[in-house]
Image: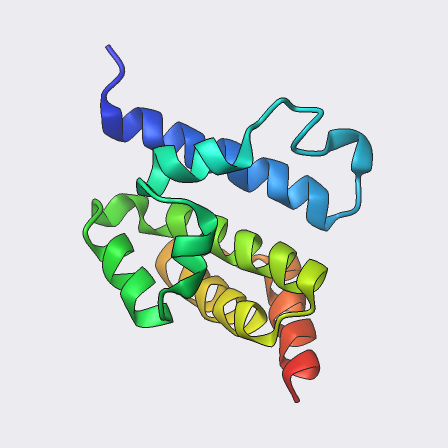
Length: 130
């Protein structure tokens, strides 16, 4: 039997993969073609939409993640990094890019994974924010 936590974690991973494909500019693999309703995924994961999430400070978002099970933090941080990176690039929003950098750094810390694409994105964001 699938629990709510497992279902939410599956949604997070699904959104992370879809965003990763969008970041890598593979339009044939877009969110719409995968029939993922972005806003409903956000509401299923966080219980509110992206606009509400984006208005929160990094600290407030980290607190939301900290309320989840510790083993799931890395998945949340990777998804949040992708989410703010993609939307920050699209909207040329430095606040979103700064949030993406923070969440990517937290992802690297909590996962213990050496992820070169994530490191490259962090460096790209640092240059953009200078």
